[in-house]
Length: 241
Ligand code: BV8
Ligand code: ZN
Image (cartoon, rainbow, N blue to C red; front, side, top):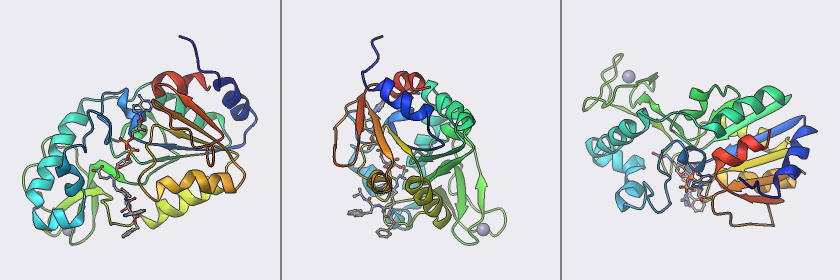
């Protein structure tokens, strides 16, 4: 397979770097068979989804929202990390100061072995009590309706950040620190429409980082990205090592 031209440039940047930050989106899990959000087969082309990932939707109809998450849990339960996820675990071990920020809730990065990681939109395998806020891992597929907290009988919700909800402050602080102190920022498989993640590239650039993007259908944005590589993450990311 002919590797895109930009790869040697990124390899050279990574070889000499002491601080590298990576931001991933649904595109890195596409090669594991997890549907992306806004693509042709997108999870979110169905208008329901856009309306379901909000606290209002959950307050109005928790059963409908849980049905949607049970459908996604069933879908994701059979998926495994791909070569791109594993390559980022290798990169984490090679680079002195490394941090991975993912928008994905599918849990494939921790499953691959990533440890220096912020799952800034949460994790589909975690639930949170709406009363006592206790967070627990729950891998039941499906989760029986309506799930209640073992500690206080409160209604459980997915431990996921919905639209209109703020990110966990620690995740946000850690991510902002990682993007504003890195020499290289790799952006892999994201459409860059969701904030605050969509602002990380500009932040890194302002701080002097070399910003490279890997995307199946690259929409080069020279204002904030130094180099764009068109290709599948599972093929391109391992070639960066
Ligand atoms: C917040 C959980 C403060 C749900 C998600 C107006 C302007 C600016 C901001 C806003 C605004 N109005 C509202 C906001 C704020 C809002 C926002 O950004 N809205 C957007 C839509 C405009 N953000 C928020 O609400 C955030 N909170 O800002 O707090 C606040 C507080 C109160 C009020 C206001 C603000 C919370 C955002 C978190 C939302 N939760 N998910 C769930 O998943 O169940 S976001 C959802 O989209 C997913 O988490 C996903 O990770 C994320 C981003 O999508 P992508 O990962 O990029 O996936 P996508 O399908 O879009 O793209 C895939 C890409 O991969 C494509 O480019 C494709 O080409 C590429 N690709 C495909 N295959 C491959 C590939 N690349 C490589 N290889 C392949 N094989
Ligand atoms: Zn509780």
